[in-house]
Structure formats: structure tokens, C-alpha cells
Amino acid sequence: MKDSSKKNPVDIYLNLVLLTILLVWSFYIVQPFVTLIVWSIIVAVSLYPIYQKLIKLTKGKKKGLVTSLFIIVLLALILTPTINLTSSLIDSGKELVEGFEAGTLKVPPPKADVKEWPFVGEKLHAAWTRASHDLENFIVTYKDELESSLSWFVGSFAGLIGSVALALFSLIFAGVFMLNADSGFKTGVQFINRLREGKGEDFMVMCTNTIRSVVKGILLVAVIQSVLAYIGFILIDLPAASVFAILVLIFAIIQLPPLIAMIPAIAIVFSYADSTPAIIFTVYSIIVSMSDSFLKPILLGKGLETPMLVILIGALGGMMLQGILGLFIGPVVLAIAYNLYNYWLTGVEVESGHSKASDAGSSGT
Image 1 (cartoon, rainbow, N blue to C red):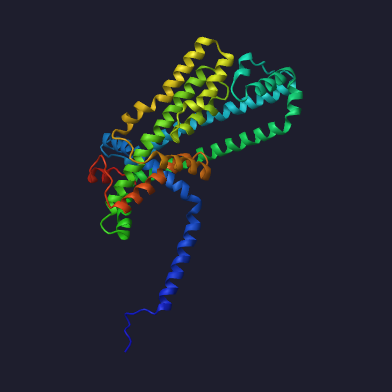
Image 2: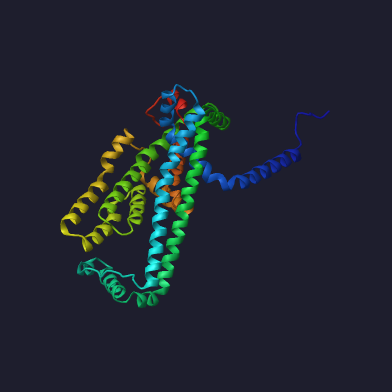
């Protein structure tokens, strides 16, 4: 008599094939939303301590309303500067086109100091002088280069707007995750316990702490530095201030001195501004570049345990894969992967500044 408890190998094989097909199919269905979901989780985990304080202030009453207002305020903080930047670029573009068509568009001649800029000084001065004397002929001569630069700018701006739109949707999803934080954390613990029994809470706490460490110690500091730099650029009337601010943000995230991105801005300022404001701007730029040395201890406390090389690879790889949004997601995802690998390799639990109980209650997802 056959043992009915033993399954036929063919049945097992067919079950695995069907399960694989189902998983692969499901992945392709969800794939367009993976970035959105991952970014939403990062945002939710990062903002949850602030959200939890708001809930405590309202004594847990009308939790849904508080969550909605919290997300609306955050959406407004993103939408307002985005709308202002877009309107400013559209207005500037209209003015350029109208001025060129009317023949009133003029390019001011460069100062002699431009020639002394390293590497590009002489060529830039010659091209600039030519544009100031005969703009129409300059455009005809450098038509291909100008079209290429314009296409790059339009493509970059479109990508930036796409990233902003994705960030807005991520905030809405993050609000839903924060509203259901306890159940989300328990589900994550249960899922990991199925993979490694008894390790679910350790892994969830470690992921939570890693996300918050990277966001506060790297991303938030980079955002603060870029905002401070942008304020200085605006006050000194620097052309393309937003472009230089984005460069400062990128350099700060990949852990290179933001001053590297600000040196060209300083050189441009010295080419058109008086010595005193230019020197003040230079000192201000140095202070902004060095501000991470005291911002990180304030925001991070005990310091970031993830190696800077992991952050650098995560930022650069994320940016190449997903554009400006990947610049933020990449370091967080790679830092989590590194800590999980380290945990698996050594079997030593990653230290955290909070107890498991407190982390479980403030995980955010």
C-alpha cells in the first residue's frame, strides 16, 4: 500500500513552476510601483517620530484628520517652491524669446577676470565677448551646441518634475503607512520570522534605525546645506542659482565637500560683483560647506555606522538608475542591504540607540 503522505515529484515540480510563474507575474505587475512604494516607506519611517508626537498632542483623537492635515502641509512645502521655480523658468523663457524676436536681448560683456579662470577662462571669455557683440551670429555659429544644451536642460527639468510628482504621491502613500504603522510593523515582523524564526523584530528594528540614520545623517544634512547655499546664491544674484544648489545637494549626498560645487559659483561672483560682497560670499560658502561637521552630531547623535563608501555607491548608483530621486533612495536601500549582510555574516545584532519596544512602537511601517 502506497503512503499517501508522500507527494509525487511531478506534483512538487508543477507546484513550484506554478508558484514561480505567479511570483514573476505579480512582480511585473507591481514593478512600475516599486520605486513609489520604497520611497513611501522611507518617508513614512523617517517622519513617523514627528507624526507620533502630533498624535500624542491630540491625544489620539481624529487620527485620520490629523494625518491628512500633516500630509497636506508637507505637500504644500514641496508644491510651493516647485510652482515658483516652474513659473520663474517659464517667465524667463518668455522674456528671452520676446527679447530675441524684438532685437532687444543683450548679453553684457564679460570682465577681464574671466580670462583668469582655470581651464576654461580664455575660451569662455572669447565666446562670451562674441555673444555680447553679435548675439544672432553667435547663436547661428553655435547652433548645434546650444540645441544640445537646451535639450539636456529640458530633459533634466522634465526628470526633476517627474521626481517631484513621484515624491508627492509618495507622501500620500506614506500618510497611509503611518496611519497603519502598528499593523505594518507586525506584518513585517511576521514575514521575516517566516524566513528566520525569532529574528523578525531584530531585522525590523535594524532597518528602521538604518533608514533614520541615513536620512538624518546624510540626506537631511545635504538638504540643509543646499538650502543655505541657495539662499546665498539668491542674495548675491548668482545666475542659475537653482542649478548650483542642486550640485551642492549632489556633492553633499555623495559625501564630497560642497565647496567643490561652489568654487565655480565663487569665480562667477568675483567676475561681476565688487570685492567686498564677493569675499563675504566666499566666507559664507566655506561656512556652508563645513556646516556638516556640526549638523551631523546634532541630528545623528551617535554617528552613522554605515561606511561612507556604501553611501557613495548608493547615491551614485541610485542617481544613474533612477535620476534625482535615486540619489535619495539609493543610499538608504544600500545601507539597509549592507547592515543585513553584516548581520547575516557576523550574527551580531546592530546596536541601536533605542530599546526594541520603543522602536517597535515608532517604526513607521
